[in-house]
Amino acid sequence: MPASSRHLLKIEGLTPPEIGQYLDLAESYVLLNRSGKTQRDLLRGRTLINLFFEDSTRTRTSFELAGKRLGADVINMSVSNSSVNKGETLLDTAATLNAMHCDLLVVRHAQSGAPNLLAQKVDAAVINAGDGTHEHPTQALLDALTIRRRKGRLAGLVVAICGDILHSRVARSNIHLLTTLGSEVRLVGPPTLIPAEAASLGVSVHHSMEQGLAGADIVMMLRLQRERMASGPVPSAREYFRFYGLDRGKLAYARPDALVMHPGPMNRGVEIDSDIADDPERSVIREQVEMGVAVRMAVLDLLSRRGPRNAR
Ligand code: CP
Image 1: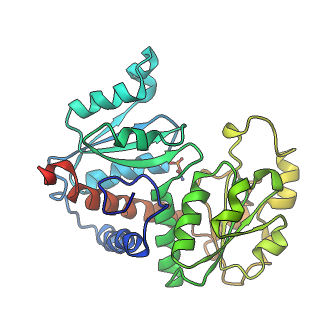
Image 2: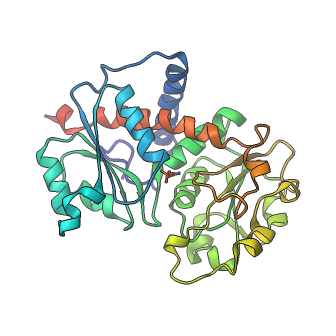
C-alpha cells in the first residue's frame, strides 16, 4: 500500500520519496514544536480516535499530543472499559466508531493484520500503531528521523538491530525502511530470536555482539518481548545480558561516534545497561520520543489531506 494511500499500515512497499515525504514534513514539525508555535487550525473539526488493544505509553500519548497540536478532537478509547469486554468483535467496534464519523483511527492490536482488516471496513484513515509481530510504521519513521538529524543521512550507515528480532514489529518496520533508504542492516541476537525469513530481507545475521557491532554507526537495542514468547527461548535475564546486553565493553566494538537507540519500553539490566541508556553522549533514546510527536503530526497531516472528507 503506497504512502499516497489514505492509510498508513506498513513501511514495506513504500518508496524512498514516499518515506522522504513523511520525514521532511516531520522535520518541519520538530522546528514548530521547539518554537512553541501551534498549528491548531490544520485538523480543526476532525476527530482522531486512539484504539489501543495493547498497552502503550509513548505511541498513544504522542498520537494524542500530535492530534491536539494540530487542532483535532482526540478520543482515547479505553478498551478495558469498552463493550469489547462484552464480546463485541473488532469489526463491530470499528463499525461503531465509523458511524460516529471518526476521521483518523489509530489502532494497536495483538493480531498481525488487524489494522489492515479495519482499513477495508471503515471510512476513516487507519494508522497502524503496532500490530502483533508485523509492523510499527511510525516507530520506524521516528527512528529514521532521529538518525537522519544526527548523522545527516541514512544511506551507507551500518545499523545493528540487536536482541529479540523474532517478536519485534519495530525491527520489521526498521528493516524495510533502512534497507529501502540504503543503510546496511545487521541483525544481532541468539539463533532462537532471529526469524527464519531474515535471509530474504536483505540483511546480515550475527550471533555475536562483537561481530555484529564491529564498525556500526547505530546500535538499536530491543526488549525481550516475553509476552509474545510461548516458551522460554532465553534461559535467564542475567545470562542474556552477559551475551547480548549492551554495556560499555560491547559498545566499544562499534564506531566511537556510534549512537545508541531503543524504542522503549526498556528493561534495564536485561538488554541495556543504565550507564549507556542514560549517557547523553551516546544515547538518543529521549530524542526518539521527541521525534515521535513530530512524526505523528506529519502522518496525521498527510493522511488527513487524503481522507474521505477531501474525497467528497
Ligand atoms: N515504542 C513503543 O511503541 O512504545 P509504547 O509501547 O510505549 O507505545
